[in-house]
Amino acid sequence: MTGSKAYEANYKNFAWAIPTHYNMGVDVCDRWAAVDPERPAIIEIDANDEPRPFSFAALRAESNRIALALRRRGVGRGDIVALLLPQSRHVAAAHIAIYKLGAIALPLASLFGPDALAYRLADSGTRALICDAPGLAKVQDIRGKLPDLQVVLCLDGAAPGADDFFAAIAAESENFTPVNTLAEDPALMIYTSGTTGLAKGALHAHRVLLGHLPGVQMPHDGFPQPGDLMWTPADWAWAGGLLNVLMPSLHYGVAVVARHLRKFDPEAAFALMAKHGIRNSYIPPTALRMLRSVPNPRAKYGFPLRTVNTGGESLGAETFHWGREQLGLTINESYGQTEVNLVLASSALWDVNRAGAIGKPVPGHDTTVIRPDGSICDDDEVGEIAIRSPNPVMLLNYWKRPEATAEKFLGDWMLTGDRARRDSDGYVFFLGRDDDVISSAGYRIGPNEIEDGLLRHPAVANAAAVGKPDALRGEIVKAFVVLNPGFEPSPELAKEIQDHAKTRLSAHEYPREIEFAAELPLTTSGKIIRRILREKA
Image (tube, rainbow, N blue to C red; front, top):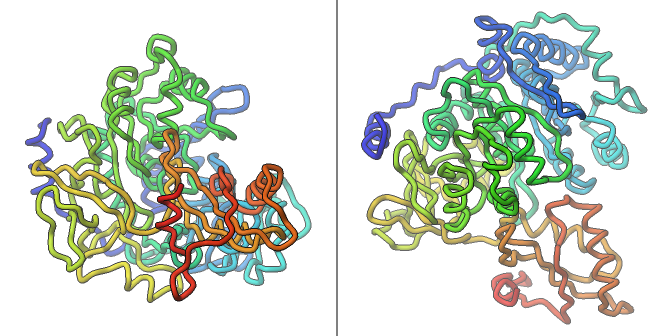
C-alpha cells in the first residue's frame, strides 16, 4: 500500500513490541553474524577512493576483542566509555563492544576542542576512552582535569598514558558472551546543549534504537529495499549520524559507507555517491544547500540515490523544490531532538510531503503542538511541539540533572521548546525556538559554552552569543563582546578573539561574527536578555 492511505493505516495500527531483554550490540551485529556472516556491514572508502568491505562476522570478532580488552582493564557494566574518532569500521565495532559489555557509550565529535572535551569527560565521569592521535593530543592537555579517566586506547599506537588499541585487541579472543541487558538499561549518552548552564548528557536505554526504526523507515520510503546502501556526511558522534544512520542500517542488515571527510565538498559528495552506488543518505540541510552549487548533478554524476532524508533544521521550500528538480526525488524531512528523536517525518512513498513542512507524526509517536497548559492547539495555532510519554525513543534522564529532567515534562508531554503550528491536514510547520539555543548547520549550540570560551580571552569582560539568520547554515553564531579596560575594538582584535574561540571550543561553535558593545542588556537579576541581541543581529 502506498499514498496517504498507507500512512494513515500504518499510524493507526502501529503498536510497539519492545522485549524485556534487549541489547543493541547483539541486535545490530551478532544477530546478522550468526545467519549471514559475510554480509557487508561497513564499507570503508580509503584514501585512494577504493571500497574496503567489513563483514558482520568481522564486526563481531573485533567488537568481542574490544569488549574483552576493556574488561581486562577494569571496565564493566555501567561504566562510561568515550569514543573520539572520525567515521570508520572501528567506531562501529567499539559501539557494539560497549553495548555488549553493558557499559555506556559516549560519542564525542572529532571537532571538539579541549574545553568542550574536558567538560564532557569530567561531567560524565568517563572511565575509558578510545581515540586516535589527534584526539589523544587534545586529551593529554586536559588529563589532569579527568580523575575518572583510567583507560585510554589509541588507534595510532601507544603513547604516555595510552595503550595501543590494535595490540590490546590482538591479545584477546574473538569469543565473548554479551551481558544480558534489559531494554531499559542505559546504553548511550549524547550531550545536548541548552540555554541554562552547560551541555547536558542525554542518557538513553538500549530500547532507543527500536524507538528510532519507524522514524528511519518513513523518510527512507519503506527502508530497507533490495540494493539499499547508506551514507551520511554527518559525524557518527551526533544523534543524526549514529541513530538516524549507522545503528538502524546495521539493524536492518544494510551496509553503511564510512568516509572521513575533513571538510564537506559538494563535488566530492556527488562523486562518492555515484562511484560507490549509494542509494540512501541522511544529509543535513546546510550540506544540501552546498550541494545546490553543483549544476546539473544527475547529468554530471549519474548517482543512483533512492532516498534522501534531512533534519536538524528547517529544509526550506527552495531546497525542497531543488531536490525534485536536480536530484530527481523528494527530500524527506524528519524532526527530533537528542532527547527524543525522529518523531515527525515526511515520506514521498506515503504522499506525506509538503514544501516548508517537517511532515506528520511518525507511527508510534503521539506528537502534536500544545499550549502552555498542555492542551492541544487548534489548527494553525502556534504552540510548542510535544511528544507523549512513555515512548521508547525518549531519554532515561539528563545525567546527574534530575531537576532538568523534570522540567522537560509537562504531565505526559515531553517538551521540546520548539515553536510550531499544525495545519488542518496534520502537517507540522517549524517556526523557531522558545529558548536561546542556536541552530547552525544542523547543530544545536548552547550559548553558555560559547560565552565561557570567549571569556577565557584576556580582552573579554563579558560576552553573549546569539543566532543570526543565515541563508546557508540556517543560523550563524554571532557574539556581542564587552572589552576589558585597556583594549580597544578593532578588526584585528575581533579576528584574534575568533581564533581563540575556534581553538578552545568546536569548529561549529566559534562566532563567525563579533560585534563590540559598551554593555549588554541585562535583567534585574543580571541575566543577559538575548532576545534584544537577536533582534539587533
